[in-house]
Length: 126
Image (cartoon, rainbow, N blue to C red; front, side, top):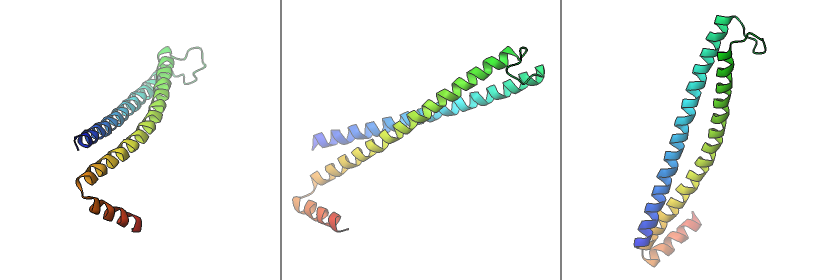
């Protein structure tokens, strides 16, 4: 019985860790979006000041070029975080399923063999 309690606690910890990881990824993605939006507005301001919007023009502002590169890098990093979040969400689903199994196993351990048999029969029927 004690090992079942430890198993449930371990699974609970894994689920909470996966949820924390997803929350952290969401926070990072939001921060990257915010910074990219700030860079967009800075690029726009710099282009208005110089009057040049063509990035291939020889006099295009250096700051705007650097901000574009940084923004593009942030967007690429955000796309990678989205993929990581999808993987983490899948891992969370698996951890939740394992937790559910462990909890059911713990519940079944406390029941009599007759109650377990009746539970199995009702699961087959309905």
